[in-house]
Picture 1: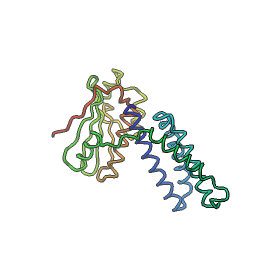
Picture 2: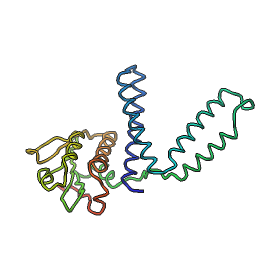
Picture 3: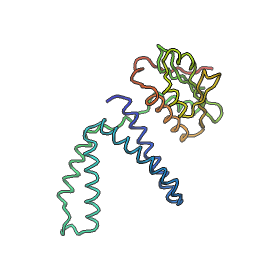
Picture 4: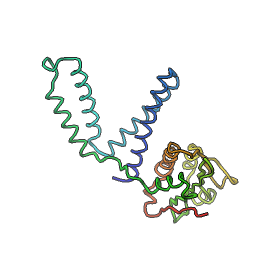
Length: 232
């Protein structure tokens, strides 16, 4: 299974949990207009997650179907006496089938990546920053430095990359959508984000995943990328 798919699964799973939490809070506060917008976003993320899971394992849809049936039968069990109508054998059968299919579904890799380790060192003040070299051959990189309670992400030499077609117009638009702004007469793209807590770290990791998996295809740079520490 390719690394990009696993990273996207991790990203959309976290997005789904975060949106579900925001939805509960909005409903509790009776802010139904905000809740409706969050619900729409949650639906889109869930749809994307289902597609990724189906790509990750062909049995994912069947696992979801069995899960719905099991939940329905358990609700029935709570309302109807077992000896009356509840199909206990069917419930056990569904649970066994679901367990077998889940055993064949590899979980997204939870291991700490080199990128996350670098981010944790940056948050702890152990390093000043680092460069993520996406492609050594075309000198495409994104650097990050921590300045007080913020992190500054920089993509340099934008004019050269546009001229040499190593960055396309659509990728620039995607980076602008991720809150990157032009700097240095449009020769750089900069994003300034909060960085003072573990929660901020997660948000920046989401940003890194979008850069490396959505804006740029990490598969193209598999043997051409590296991380360099900022030493001064």
